[in-house]
Image (cartoon, rainbow, N blue to C red):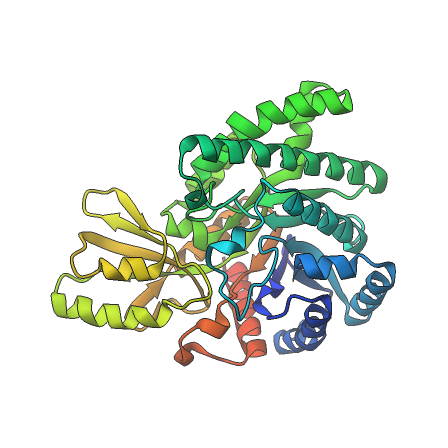
Length: 405
């Protein structure tokens, strides 16, 4: 839906199911319900999570036509896709495999190109479209700096092939599409500095050389194509976990010439570490509720000396809780955005307010907003609402924040 100059939706990765039939069925159930709960009468934007398996089906002309007819009837439109998870994302052990296959592989590139071809058919005229994707790979899969750099180089050339395809789509259809790289803790790219470094040291120099040779264009035109079609996905949860200040991050990206294709509105768990042993023991027991087996819950710690440390997953952090010198933990657990505390815990909801304030005062940052809370099935039971209520309440909270600023 359009709020001010922004297209706002929720990411359909909230719904279980990897097949196109399951994905479509969930949209048919929940889009009308959420619209009704919000009393929204205009066109309703959809942030579509499209798995590899689902994309193979939706690309078929008869299934595409069926979906287009439903969108028209439902008064809905698709403006962004989430193609970070390639395969299974619910009711299975995902953990670090959410990055697989990574950007070193042809499979990841082909899935992404196919998804863009689908988005180009769905996107309304006069609107730009984006797809969010992984931060190249999972850094702990590489045992040396050399191995990591080799992965970055392979990823770079696959991304440049995507740029070629997007430039071709733009030329043939007039539709502007961009791939939005989503930094995440323990990804090869986990913060704004690493994303900027990737652009400056890999994507631009190697990409310009490749595109000038393949397309017979100038280096300046090649750089313009790269910066147009490769952008950033600012996941508020992820940047809050690594303690980035939104205003400073947006300014750094702007100075580097990196556009923000999409902001994913999400909140992380925030825990202030108590000093007493008894309180730490109690905290440990409560945190166990969130140490579930489906998703990675990376932890970034703020320490007394002002430095930061990290744990690859919440169970490892809990093991150190009794004796840790950490002052605060921020945990990669996408909790509902409309709550700012969970009993003994807080959330990074305040970072969402800061981000929304930034985009309202500078409408050039991005046009795409997508609420991304996908952990409803693994949240402690005292946070549960029905799924339709949950989605509507999240969107309603964001709308309230946008209209209040």
